[in-house]
Image (cartoon, rainbow, N blue to C red):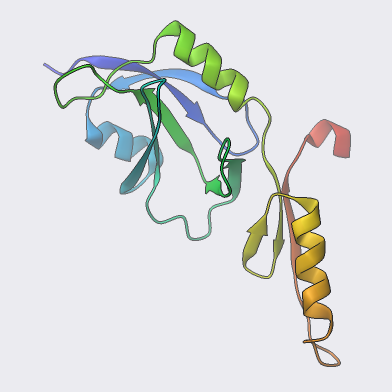
Length: 151
């Protein structure tokens, strides 16, 4: 019999939400829709699961304290003290990570490269200025931010 675990699911543009899923790698892959890659937050003993292939997925959140971002839906679960199964998040871990990921990420794509810092976007655009010929096009796409503020 498979036990369940309490996790957080973080979807692009939405606040993290608690969920209960079976405690198996297969159920994690089902939630994410494909093969997964794993990261971790220590000392909190929390695993981050995201899609291995993020091609075509919207940027979701910046990685806390690091350069880079996570694309598409990801989930957070606990790291067990022993054994090889996954573990539920404690109430404290859920609260901590709901606070960390409460704001949806805001990103600008310049061509196929995503940036989370407006200064980096400006640098990328300025560096393109002299490389483009007449009629060349670069597509800028904005993702995320507070939709109520944009309305």
